[in-house]
Image (cartoon, rainbow, N blue to C red; front, side, top):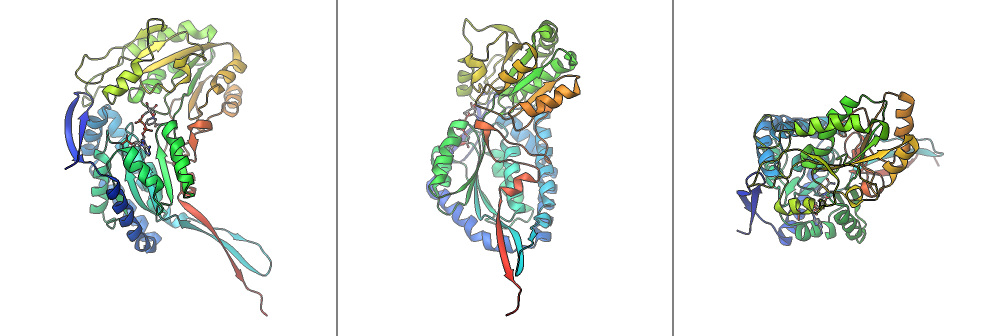
Length: 455
Ligand code: NDP
């Protein structure tokens, strides 16, 4: 067997081996999805809805088992993994309501009736990363199934386990064979083949901006639809009039959640200069209290990085000149550990403030007044998420409109809800996932004119 040795980041040991598929297997999976499409498309909206409800129930029933698998394979705290598995089931439940709600329009025209239909695309290729393996898969799979598409899903080679389980659970829950096909293999082979395959109608991708740009280029050759959820360098803007204790208490999870390997990480913390000392005092207390360790322990708040390579790439952002204000703790090896690290003061022109580090390093950038905060927040090629902390409601609304980002939270660091749109401005992506908006990206609008005038 051509095997993928799946490594547990907390121990650096192999936890499973799965078959590594190649180009011909991707072609076979696309063919299965293509063959399953006509029958799946013919399933009534009511039955498709019932099936998605059954799948949501099956995923809920397996929630703890899947959470443990994800926690071990992705190195994430079990409490986070449990939350993610609850979101996976919720996502299928949310889109179970969609098949009967894919509404069209009737449009007033002369001589007849004009109406629109929301048609499925056909076979959708999905390429997902290692940071939130199953939850990001569900954001794509659930709306695509609701809209009657069939699917070939490629998880990241580092974290294929829960996606492979999803395929099994889906079939057990009654999804016809061939509707959802999971192919575990390298992006440069399997992902690339999906992108170039003439029978794939769309690619839904989450990952790095660099790979996303290549996918957009590759997809152009066959005019595939593309949605891209890419990197971020989001701002967490703290004004002096904010509840500074609350802002500082929330800042660690905002930037160090998932060990900083989160496209929504608020890795640039902009603090109004007059509040800097007070904020940093509270922030230091919160970071030093973080429990970094065994992902399977209930109390753990941060686990290891995903791989030795990721630890090396994150570590390259620190050198002797780095303005390290303070660091949290991390276990010694084995495992790919990295202590949460806060740099202050950082200029927005510094490398640490410009590049997506994708690890637990936060850059604190002081500012003076609202105009400078907006200028710094927007001085980045990215635009995915962000937060603003203030007690001034009008300022909160001004900032909401001024910051160029797809998702913004006021006095909170929450980014994602199943029922609300998620996606990026600028180089953070194209399209929206979740909420009703995602369905637009898994359907085509068909316009039908029906002449009714006699003679
Ligand atoms: P990638 O963008 O390389 O990987 C994301 C997915 O794309 C994986 O399934 C990968 O497969 C696949 N892939 C890789 N190359 C190709 C290709 N040529 N054609 C089609 N699919 C491809 O992210 P990395 O895992 O390499 O992480 C690198 C950096 O990307 C991180 O440090 C971070 O900055 C950013 N990133 C951002 C994410 C986000 O959520 N926005 C998520 C992950 C990473 P495989 O891994 O199996 O080879």
